[in-house]
Length: 148
Image (cartoon, rainbow, N blue to C red; front, top):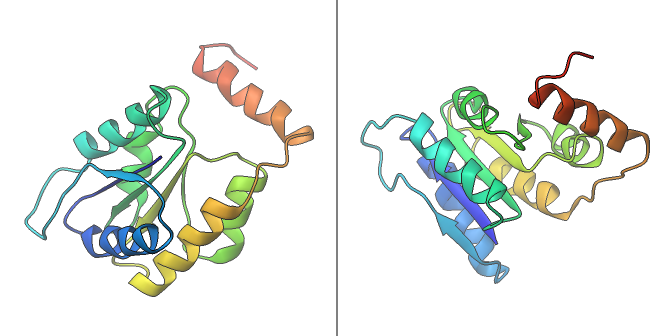
């Protein structure tokens, strides 16, 4: 299961990703928004992030004007590793090395075609584990309030 959300600045990217998911028969839940009327991004990011940490979904996509606001909000949820990516290499590495569970995209930064390209990479790239798991564990320690 994939979860998606967007504010008014990213709704077109979200819709393009949904079309791709439909074509691939990948199940998803859409937390909105559904048009270009102005909405706040933090509640949408929270719903998507919490669906992942609650086990309802494995990964998610959040889209806003730049992807930055969504990523900041989503990363406040313990267990979320949300990354803003605008290029294929970053989308691949955020999965391989960071085990990111949310990809954040900017509708004022990339177009729909690029969003789908990055979504494909994000969904099809595995986490490498190994030395990278140690680093993910360190991030989890920081979330628990530990000082490294």
